[in-house]
Length: 379
Image 1 (spheres, rainbow, N blue to C red):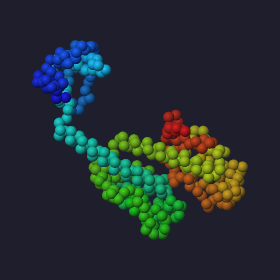
Image 2 (cartoon, one colour):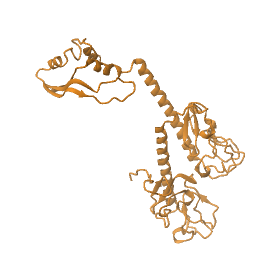
Image 3 (cartoon, rainbow, N blue to C red):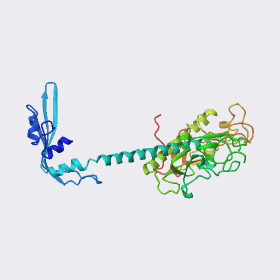
């Protein structure tokens, strides 16, 4: 680069890439080259990208070509450019290159951006894991620290939900289906979460590393687990960029889809069924109600729900259907022993299921054209 600048300033020397006479001296570096001129005259220049770069003319007088020469078994090639208006070319070379100080600033901005992004995703993924690990009413955090509250936190022992009371509808069951009491720990937390209904608050779980017990940035969380990142507790500036939001929703959509699909396959495998009699996909309707998916209507005691996995016969008092949430898998002429293949009573997206168990995902229950968002499947 410096050789180019020296030449333009008329200070090219013998060890420079170019000497002052440009094409003539460059051509002299070759014995008997073949020169192909690819542009000659006033050449239009592409429009610049804006910003702080140099302002270039619409066109510049130049000659550009390629010189080639065979030397032994090697082909030598040089791109040669002769520019008439050297001042503009010098501006292109010098103004577009950041100073060392500017370069350091750029590198520091990139470092901070990556640091923010890394911490954001560690918090977001911890929330995803915690929510998937625990039963929640309607599959959502009952009382999250959301943007609407006007306050963010960097204390992960108080995030994302500190106020949902154990033993109430907000925190009713643990992940084993055992009931919480008022002696169990409240809330759904990334650090120090009471995940076991043991009538005390001593069996605590950790979903995020100790080094992030107190994060550098501040966070809020929406009911379905969408985390937002802020500069301070007062929500002065949000750092979650649009591309991060888009990436989050893409992950959420895909993760939920595969959770539902795997739950359907587990349901079919456990109950020995490979074809649903009345799978949940009536024309024009999809559902996010997992207690009615994929098959809510097959009658207990009928040919298609004849006996349970222990060969006990279903009777009229048992619950109808094959559902991934609150499924009656035990033939006891009652509905007291219900199984969950998914921890989401209601999903964010909407689903149908084919008779072989293949699940389709929709953004809207209408199933209108363009609303199917089933992720790509390679099998």
